[in-house]
Length: 483
Image (cartoon, rainbow, N blue to C red; front, side, top):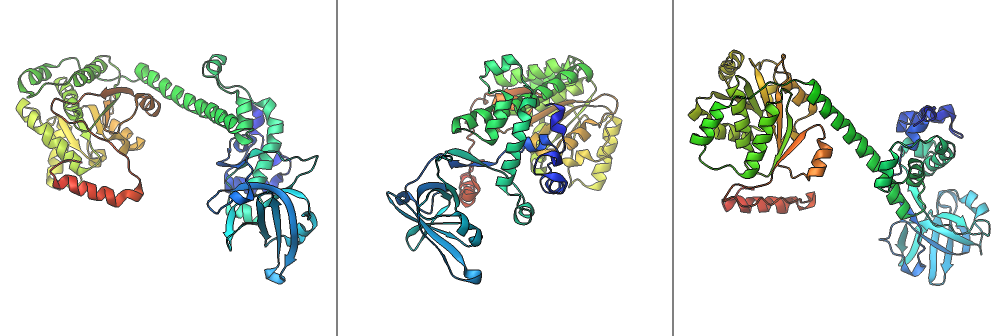
Protein backbone atom coordinates (compact mmCIF):
# COMPACT_ATOMS: atom_id res chain seq x y z
CA UNK A 1 0.00 0.00 0.00
CA UNK A 2 1.04 3.61 -0.57
CA UNK A 3 2.25 6.13 2.00
CA UNK A 4 -1.36 7.30 2.28
CA UNK A 5 -2.02 4.40 4.66
CA UNK A 6 0.69 5.62 7.04
CA UNK A 7 -1.40 8.76 7.73
CA UNK A 8 -2.28 9.13 11.40
CA UNK A 9 -5.87 8.20 12.17
CA UNK A 10 -6.51 11.54 13.91
CA UNK A 11 -6.73 13.20 10.48
CA UNK A 12 -9.79 11.15 9.48
CA UNK A 13 -13.02 13.15 9.53
CA UNK A 14 -14.81 12.84 12.86
CA UNK A 15 -11.86 11.36 14.74
CA UNK A 16 -9.58 14.12 15.99
CA UNK A 17 -6.73 13.93 18.46
CA UNK A 18 -8.68 12.91 21.58
CA UNK A 19 -10.59 10.06 19.93
CA UNK A 20 -7.43 8.98 18.09
CA UNK A 21 -5.61 8.58 21.40
CA UNK A 22 -8.46 6.40 22.67
CA UNK A 23 -8.38 4.26 19.52
CA UNK A 24 -4.63 3.84 19.89
CA UNK A 25 -4.85 2.82 23.53
CA UNK A 26 -7.93 0.59 23.33
CA UNK A 27 -7.76 -0.93 19.83
CA UNK A 28 -4.16 -0.39 18.74
CA UNK A 29 -5.30 1.72 15.78
CA UNK A 30 -2.68 4.31 14.83
CA UNK A 31 -2.93 4.82 11.06
CA UNK A 32 -5.32 4.61 8.14
CA UNK A 33 -3.74 1.26 7.32
CA UNK A 34 -4.53 -0.09 10.80
CA UNK A 35 -8.19 0.90 10.46
CA UNK A 36 -8.75 -0.43 6.96
CA UNK A 37 -7.27 -3.78 7.97
CA UNK A 38 -9.47 -4.05 11.06
CA UNK A 39 -11.99 -6.36 9.45
CA UNK A 40 -15.45 -7.14 10.87
CA UNK A 41 -15.52 -10.26 13.02
CA UNK A 42 -19.08 -11.10 11.93
CA UNK A 43 -22.00 -9.77 9.92
CA UNK A 44 -25.66 -9.29 10.73
CA UNK A 45 -27.91 -10.59 8.00
CA UNK A 46 -30.14 -7.73 6.87
CA UNK A 47 -30.94 -9.44 3.57
CA UNK A 48 -33.98 -11.39 4.79
CA UNK A 49 -37.30 -10.20 6.20
CA UNK A 50 -39.23 -12.40 8.63
CA UNK A 51 -42.96 -12.62 9.14
CA UNK A 52 -44.00 -11.88 12.71
CA UNK A 53 -45.70 -15.26 12.97
CA UNK A 54 -42.33 -16.99 12.31
CA UNK A 55 -40.43 -15.29 15.15
CA UNK A 56 -39.19 -17.26 18.15
CA UNK A 57 -36.52 -16.78 20.81
CA UNK A 58 -33.95 -19.10 19.21
CA UNK A 59 -33.51 -16.86 16.18
CA UNK A 60 -30.49 -14.52 15.91
CA UNK A 61 -30.89 -10.86 15.01
CA UNK A 62 -33.64 -10.56 12.41
CA UNK A 63 -35.63 -7.84 10.70
CA UNK A 64 -39.34 -7.32 10.21
CA UNK A 65 -41.16 -4.75 8.08
CA UNK A 66 -44.52 -3.43 9.19
CA UNK A 67 -46.71 -0.53 10.31
CA UNK A 68 -46.08 0.99 13.74
CA UNK A 69 -49.12 1.11 16.05
CA UNK A 70 -50.03 1.92 19.64
CA UNK A 71 -46.88 3.85 20.48
CA UNK A 72 -47.10 5.11 24.05
CA UNK A 73 -44.93 6.04 27.01
CA UNK A 74 -45.71 4.25 30.26
CA UNK A 75 -44.32 4.51 33.79
CA UNK A 76 -42.40 7.33 35.42
CA UNK A 77 -38.88 7.95 36.64
CA UNK A 78 -36.56 4.93 36.40
CA UNK A 79 -39.48 2.77 35.21
CA UNK A 80 -40.32 5.05 32.31
CA UNK A 81 -40.35 3.20 29.01
CA UNK A 82 -41.82 3.39 25.54
CA UNK A 83 -43.81 0.53 24.06
CA UNK A 84 -45.24 0.03 20.60
CA UNK A 85 -46.33 -2.63 18.16
CA UNK A 86 -45.32 -3.32 14.58
CA UNK A 87 -47.85 -5.25 12.53
CA UNK A 88 -47.51 -7.11 9.26
CA UNK A 89 -50.02 -9.39 7.55
CA UNK A 90 -49.16 -12.30 9.88
CA UNK A 91 -49.35 -10.68 13.32
CA UNK A 92 -48.06 -8.10 15.79
CA UNK A 93 -44.58 -7.69 17.31
CA UNK A 94 -44.23 -5.89 20.64
CA UNK A 95 -41.42 -3.34 20.93
CA UNK A 96 -40.02 -1.84 24.13
CA UNK A 97 -37.36 0.77 24.94
CA UNK A 98 -36.05 1.59 28.41
CA UNK A 99 -33.46 4.19 27.37
CA UNK A 100 -33.63 7.32 25.24
CA UNK A 101 -37.39 7.55 25.60
CA UNK A 102 -37.57 11.35 25.23
CA UNK A 103 -35.63 11.22 21.96
CA UNK A 104 -37.63 8.28 20.60
CA UNK A 105 -40.91 10.10 21.26
CA UNK A 106 -39.83 12.71 18.73
CA UNK A 107 -38.66 10.42 15.93
CA UNK A 108 -40.88 7.33 16.05
CA UNK A 109 -44.34 7.90 14.58
CA UNK A 110 -47.57 5.93 14.64
CA UNK A 111 -48.99 4.62 11.36
CA UNK A 112 -45.60 4.83 9.63
CA UNK A 113 -43.89 1.86 7.93
CA UNK A 114 -40.61 0.78 9.55
CA UNK A 115 -37.92 -1.83 9.22
CA UNK A 116 -37.39 -3.22 12.74
CA UNK A 117 -34.11 -5.00 13.48
CA UNK A 118 -33.24 -6.83 16.71
CA UNK A 119 -33.15 -10.05 18.72
CA UNK A 120 -36.62 -11.62 19.10
CA UNK A 121 -37.71 -13.02 22.45
CA UNK A 122 -40.99 -14.33 23.81
CA UNK A 123 -42.79 -12.40 26.57
CA UNK A 124 -45.99 -13.96 27.92
CA UNK A 125 -46.01 -16.14 24.84
CA UNK A 126 -45.89 -13.19 22.42
CA UNK A 127 -42.93 -12.10 20.26
CA UNK A 128 -41.08 -9.05 21.55
CA UNK A 129 -37.95 -7.02 20.77
CA UNK A 130 -36.15 -4.83 23.29
CA UNK A 131 -34.29 -1.76 22.00
CA UNK A 132 -34.62 -2.64 18.29
CA UNK A 133 -33.09 -0.53 15.56
CA UNK A 134 -35.73 1.38 13.62
CA UNK A 135 -35.44 2.53 10.02
CA UNK A 136 -38.28 4.44 8.44
CA UNK A 137 -39.34 3.30 4.97
CA UNK A 138 -39.93 6.28 2.68
CA UNK A 139 -39.75 6.92 -1.04
CA UNK A 140 -36.28 8.42 -0.62
CA UNK A 141 -35.13 5.59 1.69
CA UNK A 142 -36.58 2.31 0.43
CA UNK A 143 -35.99 -0.94 2.29
CA UNK A 144 -32.42 -1.82 1.35
CA UNK A 145 -31.21 -5.29 2.30
CA UNK A 146 -27.53 -5.82 3.14
CA UNK A 147 -25.00 -7.53 5.41
CA UNK A 148 -24.19 -5.27 8.35
CA UNK A 149 -20.57 -5.47 9.56
CA UNK A 150 -19.89 -5.90 13.28
CA UNK A 151 -16.54 -4.69 14.62
CA UNK A 152 -14.79 -5.49 17.87
CA UNK A 153 -14.48 -2.59 20.26
CA UNK A 154 -13.89 -2.24 24.00
CA UNK A 155 -16.24 -1.70 26.94
CA UNK A 156 -14.57 1.63 27.68
CA UNK A 157 -15.04 2.92 24.13
CA UNK A 158 -18.56 1.58 23.84
CA UNK A 159 -19.93 2.65 27.23
CA UNK A 160 -18.13 5.92 27.90
CA UNK A 161 -17.13 7.35 24.53
CA UNK A 162 -19.88 6.09 22.18
CA UNK A 163 -17.39 4.30 19.94
CA UNK A 164 -19.40 1.17 19.24
CA UNK A 165 -19.41 -1.10 16.21
CA UNK A 166 -21.54 1.35 14.23
CA UNK A 167 -19.16 4.21 14.99
CA UNK A 168 -16.23 2.17 13.71
CA UNK A 169 -18.25 1.24 10.62
CA UNK A 170 -18.82 4.94 9.93
CA UNK A 171 -15.09 5.62 10.29
CA UNK A 172 -14.27 2.77 7.90
CA UNK A 173 -16.86 4.00 5.39
CA UNK A 174 -15.38 7.51 5.46
CA UNK A 175 -11.89 6.10 5.07
CA UNK A 176 -12.80 3.88 2.13
CA UNK A 177 -14.05 6.90 0.18
CA UNK A 178 -10.57 8.38 0.48
CA UNK A 179 -8.51 5.22 0.39
CA UNK A 180 -9.66 3.13 -2.56
CA UNK A 181 -7.80 5.23 -5.19
CA UNK A 182 -4.59 4.65 -3.20
CA UNK A 183 -4.92 0.85 -3.02
CA UNK A 184 -2.29 -0.80 -5.20
CA UNK A 185 -2.62 -4.34 -6.51
CA UNK A 186 -0.18 -6.54 -4.59
CA UNK A 187 -0.43 -9.71 -6.68
CA UNK A 188 0.66 -10.24 -10.24
CA UNK A 189 -1.82 -10.11 -13.10
CA UNK A 190 -1.10 -13.77 -13.83
CA UNK A 191 -1.92 -14.86 -10.27
CA UNK A 192 -5.13 -12.83 -10.19
CA UNK A 193 -6.20 -14.32 -13.51
CA UNK A 194 -5.10 -17.89 -12.71
CA UNK A 195 -7.07 -18.11 -9.46
CA UNK A 196 -9.95 -15.84 -10.43
CA UNK A 197 -9.19 -13.41 -7.61
CA UNK A 198 -11.05 -10.23 -6.82
CA UNK A 199 -8.86 -7.12 -7.18
CA UNK A 200 -7.42 -5.72 -3.94
CA UNK A 201 -9.45 -2.50 -3.82
CA UNK A 202 -12.76 -4.27 -4.39
CA UNK A 203 -11.84 -6.92 -1.82
CA UNK A 204 -11.27 -4.25 0.84
CA UNK A 205 -14.59 -2.61 -0.02
CA UNK A 206 -16.49 -5.90 0.08
CA UNK A 207 -14.89 -7.28 3.26
CA UNK A 208 -16.20 -4.24 5.13
CA UNK A 209 -19.49 -3.63 3.34
CA UNK A 210 -20.40 -6.71 1.28
CA UNK A 211 -23.16 -6.38 -1.27
CA UNK A 212 -23.98 -10.09 -0.97
CA UNK A 213 -22.83 -13.28 0.73
CA UNK A 214 -21.14 -14.31 -2.52
CA UNK A 215 -19.19 -11.04 -2.71
CA UNK A 216 -18.14 -11.45 0.93
CA UNK A 217 -16.85 -14.98 0.30
CA UNK A 218 -14.93 -13.83 -2.77
CA UNK A 219 -13.35 -10.94 -0.84
CA UNK A 220 -12.37 -13.22 2.04
CA UNK A 221 -10.79 -15.70 -0.34
CA UNK A 222 -8.77 -12.95 -2.01
CA UNK A 223 -7.42 -11.53 1.27
CA UNK A 224 -6.69 -14.97 2.77
CA UNK A 225 -4.96 -16.04 -0.44
CA UNK A 226 -2.74 -12.95 -0.37
CA UNK A 227 -1.79 -13.42 3.29
CA UNK A 228 -0.92 -17.10 2.90
CA UNK A 229 0.86 -16.44 -0.40
CA UNK A 230 3.28 -13.96 1.18
CA UNK A 231 3.79 -16.14 4.27
CA UNK A 232 4.68 -19.04 2.00
CA UNK A 233 6.86 -16.87 -0.22
CA UNK A 234 8.83 -15.67 2.80
CA UNK A 235 9.32 -19.22 4.10
CA UNK A 236 10.41 -20.53 0.71
CA UNK A 237 12.85 -17.66 0.37
CA UNK A 238 14.29 -18.46 3.80
CA UNK A 239 14.63 -22.11 2.80
CA UNK A 240 16.44 -21.22 -0.41
CA UNK A 241 18.75 -18.82 1.45
CA UNK A 242 19.50 -21.52 4.01
CA UNK A 243 20.45 -23.97 1.30
CA UNK A 244 22.91 -21.46 -0.11
CA UNK A 245 24.21 -19.74 3.02
CA UNK A 246 24.15 -22.29 5.89
CA UNK A 247 26.89 -24.88 5.71
CA UNK A 248 26.39 -28.30 7.28
CA UNK A 249 28.73 -31.18 8.02
CA UNK A 250 29.28 -33.81 5.33
CA UNK A 251 28.15 -37.30 6.34
CA UNK A 252 29.19 -39.44 3.37
CA UNK A 253 30.85 -42.43 5.07
CA UNK A 254 28.37 -44.97 6.46
CA UNK A 255 30.18 -48.28 7.24
CA UNK A 256 28.42 -48.84 10.59
CA UNK A 257 25.09 -48.15 8.95
CA UNK A 258 25.77 -50.72 6.24
CA UNK A 259 26.72 -53.30 8.88
CA UNK A 260 23.62 -52.44 10.93
CA UNK A 261 21.32 -52.79 7.95
CA UNK A 262 22.80 -56.06 6.68
CA UNK A 263 23.59 -57.88 9.92
CA UNK A 264 21.79 -56.35 12.91
CA UNK A 265 18.40 -54.94 11.91
CA UNK A 266 15.90 -57.73 12.68
CA UNK A 267 13.21 -56.60 10.27
CA UNK A 268 12.86 -55.17 6.79
CA UNK A 269 12.37 -51.47 6.30
CA UNK A 270 9.30 -50.35 4.41
CA UNK A 271 9.59 -48.64 1.06
CA UNK A 272 8.56 -45.35 2.69
CA UNK A 273 11.29 -45.65 5.34
CA UNK A 274 13.92 -46.36 2.67
CA UNK A 275 12.75 -43.35 0.68
CA UNK A 276 13.02 -41.05 3.70
CA UNK A 277 16.48 -42.41 4.63
CA UNK A 278 17.59 -41.71 1.06
CA UNK A 279 16.26 -38.13 1.36
CA UNK A 280 18.23 -37.63 4.59
CA UNK A 281 21.44 -39.11 3.15
CA UNK A 282 21.20 -36.83 0.11
CA UNK A 283 20.87 -33.85 2.46
CA UNK A 284 23.95 -35.00 4.40
CA UNK A 285 25.99 -35.14 1.20
CA UNK A 286 25.26 -31.58 0.02
CA UNK A 287 27.48 -29.73 2.48
CA UNK A 288 24.48 -27.61 3.45
CA UNK A 289 22.41 -27.77 6.61
CA UNK A 290 19.53 -30.24 6.50
CA UNK A 291 16.26 -28.86 7.83
CA UNK A 292 13.68 -31.62 7.32
CA UNK A 293 10.23 -32.44 8.70
CA UNK A 294 9.46 -36.15 9.05
CA UNK A 295 5.77 -36.93 9.32
CA UNK A 296 4.32 -40.34 10.06
CA UNK A 297 1.67 -42.04 12.17
CA UNK A 298 2.47 -43.62 15.51
CA UNK A 299 3.97 -47.02 14.72
CA UNK A 300 5.09 -46.07 11.22
CA UNK A 301 8.79 -46.40 12.10
CA UNK A 302 10.01 -42.82 12.53
CA UNK A 303 12.28 -43.76 15.45
CA UNK A 304 14.35 -46.30 13.51
CA UNK A 305 14.75 -43.72 10.73
CA UNK A 306 15.99 -41.24 13.35
CA UNK A 307 18.45 -43.83 14.70
CA UNK A 308 19.82 -44.51 11.21
CA UNK A 309 20.34 -40.75 10.72
CA UNK A 310 22.20 -40.69 14.06
CA UNK A 311 24.34 -43.62 12.86
CA UNK A 312 25.31 -41.62 9.77
CA UNK A 313 26.47 -38.80 12.05
CA UNK A 314 28.44 -41.21 14.27
CA UNK A 315 30.11 -42.80 11.23
CA UNK A 316 31.48 -39.35 10.36
CA UNK A 317 32.74 -38.40 13.81
CA UNK A 318 29.76 -36.26 14.83
CA UNK A 319 27.48 -36.46 17.84
CA UNK A 320 23.69 -36.38 17.73
CA UNK A 321 20.86 -35.75 20.16
CA UNK A 322 17.16 -36.59 20.18
CA UNK A 323 14.88 -34.37 22.27
CA UNK A 324 11.39 -35.48 23.32
CA UNK A 325 8.73 -33.37 25.08
CA UNK A 326 8.20 -35.75 28.04
CA UNK A 327 10.33 -38.08 30.17
CA UNK A 328 8.09 -41.04 29.31
CA UNK A 329 8.67 -40.53 25.59
CA UNK A 330 12.39 -39.93 26.14
CA UNK A 331 12.61 -43.20 28.12
CA UNK A 332 10.86 -45.08 25.31
CA UNK A 333 13.24 -43.68 22.71
CA UNK A 334 16.30 -44.38 24.85
CA UNK A 335 15.40 -48.01 25.56
CA UNK A 336 14.50 -48.63 21.92
CA UNK A 337 17.72 -47.13 20.55
CA UNK A 338 20.05 -48.53 23.21
CA UNK A 339 19.37 -52.14 22.26
CA UNK A 340 20.74 -51.42 18.77
CA UNK A 341 23.50 -49.02 19.87
CA UNK A 342 24.94 -51.61 22.28
CA UNK A 343 25.21 -54.18 19.48
CA UNK A 344 27.16 -51.68 17.38
CA UNK A 345 29.49 -50.37 20.10
CA UNK A 346 27.84 -46.95 19.95
CA UNK A 347 27.78 -45.03 23.26
CA UNK A 348 24.32 -43.60 24.00
CA UNK A 349 23.13 -41.68 27.07
CA UNK A 350 19.93 -40.24 28.51
CA UNK A 351 19.48 -36.85 30.17
CA UNK A 352 16.16 -35.75 31.71
CA UNK A 353 15.00 -33.66 34.62
CA UNK A 354 15.12 -36.67 36.93
CA UNK A 355 18.70 -37.70 36.05
CA UNK A 356 20.80 -37.80 39.23
CA UNK A 357 23.44 -35.11 39.71
CA UNK A 358 26.33 -37.61 39.71
CA UNK A 359 25.09 -39.16 36.46
CA UNK A 360 24.68 -35.70 34.94
CA UNK A 361 28.31 -34.84 35.63
CA UNK A 362 29.48 -38.04 33.95
CA UNK A 363 27.26 -37.36 30.92
CA UNK A 364 28.46 -33.76 30.64
CA UNK A 365 32.09 -34.90 30.62
CA UNK A 366 31.44 -37.65 28.07
CA UNK A 367 29.70 -35.15 25.79
CA UNK A 368 32.53 -32.63 26.00
CA UNK A 369 35.17 -35.28 25.32
CA UNK A 370 33.25 -36.84 22.43
CA UNK A 371 33.13 -40.22 24.19
CA UNK A 372 29.32 -40.19 24.00
CA UNK A 373 28.00 -40.49 20.44
CA UNK A 374 24.25 -40.15 20.99
CA UNK A 375 22.14 -38.41 23.63
CA UNK A 376 18.39 -38.79 24.23
CA UNK A 377 16.59 -36.42 26.57
CA UNK A 378 14.01 -33.76 27.31
CA UNK A 379 14.28 -29.99 27.80
CA UNK A 380 17.27 -30.76 30.04
CA UNK A 381 19.32 -30.88 26.81
CA UNK A 382 18.87 -27.12 26.50
CA UNK A 383 20.75 -26.30 29.72
CA UNK A 384 23.87 -24.20 29.17
CA UNK A 385 26.02 -26.75 31.00
CA UNK A 386 25.26 -29.34 28.29
CA UNK A 387 28.15 -28.93 25.83
CA UNK A 388 29.02 -31.21 22.92
CA UNK A 389 32.42 -31.79 21.37
CA UNK A 390 30.94 -31.89 17.87
CA UNK A 391 27.15 -31.85 17.61
CA UNK A 392 26.25 -32.64 14.02
CA UNK A 393 22.57 -33.66 14.15
CA UNK A 394 19.63 -32.57 16.31
CA UNK A 395 16.32 -34.43 16.25
CA UNK A 396 13.13 -33.22 17.88
CA UNK A 397 10.15 -35.52 18.35
CA UNK A 398 6.67 -33.99 18.39
CA UNK A 399 8.28 -30.77 17.24
CA UNK A 400 5.11 -28.69 17.70
CA UNK A 401 5.66 -29.01 21.47
CA UNK A 402 8.84 -26.94 21.24
CA UNK A 403 9.06 -23.21 20.62
CA UNK A 404 11.35 -21.53 18.11
CA UNK A 405 13.64 -20.25 20.89
CA UNK A 406 14.07 -23.77 22.29
CA UNK A 407 14.92 -25.23 18.90
CA UNK A 408 17.35 -22.41 18.17
CA UNK A 409 19.11 -22.94 21.49
CA UNK A 410 19.66 -26.60 20.65
CA UNK A 411 21.15 -25.69 17.28
CA UNK A 412 23.61 -23.35 19.00
CA UNK A 413 25.20 -26.27 20.85
CA UNK A 414 27.78 -26.35 18.05
CA UNK A 415 29.38 -22.87 17.79
CA UNK A 416 31.53 -23.80 14.79
CA UNK A 417 29.08 -25.25 12.26
CA UNK A 418 25.31 -25.42 12.62
CA UNK A 419 24.01 -28.99 13.10
CA UNK A 420 21.62 -30.72 10.77
CA UNK A 421 17.99 -30.64 11.93
CA UNK A 422 15.35 -33.37 11.73
CA UNK A 423 11.96 -32.68 13.31
CA UNK A 424 9.36 -35.42 13.65
CA UNK A 425 5.61 -35.37 14.15
CA UNK A 426 2.84 -37.94 14.31
CA UNK A 427 0.18 -35.28 13.77
CA UNK A 428 -1.53 -35.98 10.43
CA UNK A 429 -0.92 -32.96 8.23
CA UNK A 430 -2.00 -32.84 4.56
CA UNK A 431 1.10 -32.27 2.46
CA UNK A 432 -0.11 -28.94 1.10
CA UNK A 433 -0.86 -27.72 4.63
CA UNK A 434 2.51 -29.00 5.87
CA UNK A 435 4.22 -26.99 3.15
CA UNK A 436 2.28 -23.91 4.31
CA UNK A 437 2.95 -24.37 8.03
CA UNK A 438 6.54 -25.52 7.57
CA UNK A 439 7.52 -23.84 4.32
CA UNK A 440 11.10 -23.45 5.52
CA UNK A 441 11.40 -27.23 5.94
CA UNK A 442 11.77 -30.00 3.42
CA UNK A 443 8.97 -32.49 4.05
CA UNK A 444 9.24 -36.29 4.12
CA UNK A 445 6.28 -38.56 4.83
CA UNK A 446 6.23 -42.18 5.99
CA UNK A 447 2.92 -43.20 4.47
CA UNK A 448 3.37 -46.96 4.80
CA UNK A 449 3.09 -49.08 7.96
CA UNK A 450 5.47 -51.98 8.70
CA UNK A 451 4.13 -55.46 7.93
CA UNK A 452 1.66 -56.69 10.53
CA UNK A 453 0.91 -53.24 11.94
CA UNK A 454 -2.75 -52.25 12.09
CA UNK A 455 -3.63 -48.84 10.66
CA UNK A 456 -3.73 -46.02 13.21
CA UNK A 457 -7.12 -44.36 13.64
CA UNK A 458 -6.91 -40.64 14.43
CA UNK A 459 -10.06 -38.88 15.65
CA UNK A 460 -11.02 -35.50 17.08
CA UNK A 461 -13.37 -35.05 20.00
CA UNK A 462 -14.68 -31.84 21.55
CA UNK A 463 -14.13 -30.92 25.18
CA UNK A 464 -17.79 -31.59 25.94
CA UNK A 465 -17.04 -35.31 25.36
CA UNK A 466 -14.05 -35.35 27.74
CA UNK A 467 -15.57 -37.89 30.17
CA UNK A 468 -16.55 -40.23 27.34
CA UNK A 469 -13.00 -40.01 25.99
CA UNK A 470 -11.58 -40.90 29.41
CA UNK A 471 -13.91 -43.90 29.59
CA UNK A 472 -12.85 -45.03 26.13
CA UNK A 473 -9.16 -44.71 27.08
CA UNK A 474 -9.72 -46.81 30.20
CA UNK A 475 -11.55 -49.53 28.26
CA UNK A 476 -8.85 -49.74 25.59
CA UNK A 477 -6.03 -49.96 28.15
CA UNK A 478 -7.93 -52.69 30.02
CA UNK A 479 -8.07 -54.64 26.75
CA UNK A 480 -4.29 -54.41 26.48
CA UNK A 481 -4.35 -51.95 23.59
CA UNK A 482 -2.46 -48.72 23.09
CA UNK A 483 -4.33 -45.50 22.60
